[in-house]
Length: 119
Image 1 (cartoon, rainbow, N blue to C red):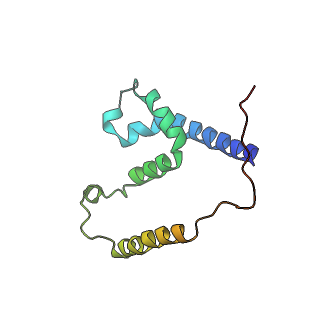
Image 2 (cartoon, helix red, strand yellow):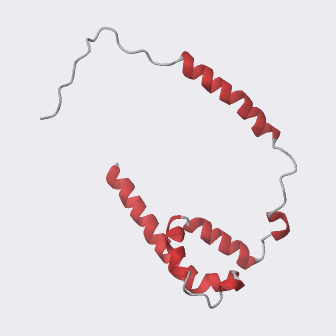
Image 3 (cartoon, rainbow, N blue to C red):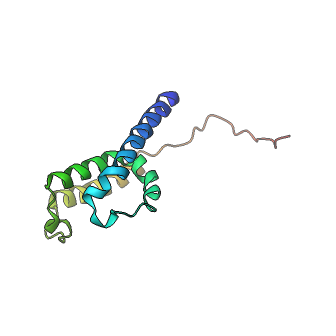
């Protein structure tokens, strides 16, 4: 299991390295006019792109195709999502009550053993 997770992480980082190479050489100039000619800061972006490369690709696609709704990006949230609010109001107390009701009790039939200091 651990070897599989490490292999998955390695593939993730290799894909991130490929995206970082293409994005920082070609893509960043196309989507951010302030980044044109600014080459010194680009190596600082590599660790972030390695980790969040799917988000970088998605954002690059949105900006390249012109589907970005910039006027809605910083709009304050006007309506509270009431379904989410009601769910949290119900689930948090329920989790607290269930946590107290279902807590484990230590075994009473096993005598405690005193550990000795390492030598």
